[in-house]
Amino acid sequence: MEIRLLKELESDAAVLRRSGQDTKWQKLAETLQDNTHMLDAQRQLRKLVIFTEQRDTLNYLNERLVTLLGNPAAVVTIHGQTPREKRRQVQEAFASDPRWSSSSPPMQPVKVSTFNART
Image 1 (tube, rainbow, N blue to C red):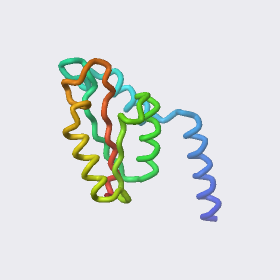
Image 2: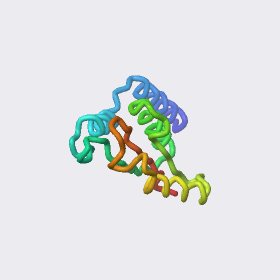
Image 3: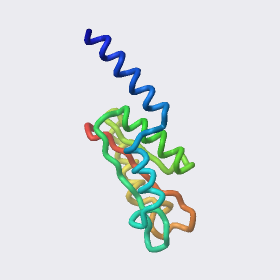
């Protein structure tokens, strides 16, 4: 009985994901694209850190954000399996890389970091 229920839930989740009807994602995408609070004084997108508890959600957001922004380098992730040194490098780059500062030239994509909350 439990296995059947889990399979049904898994199937329902797959249908929902394929439908593209993810209201939380739609709201995040709208916020990134249409919210003046996401722009700095030069009208460039600000840095953004997103925390998530589940690794599947982290991977999902990474995929969707890369697609939305059109630049894989604009999204970095850290999770529980990220080695300590790599984690430090990602955090340092996010904080200090001049390509992602508010004084970046026009059309610079937003730098988004997604962190798994259980790291």
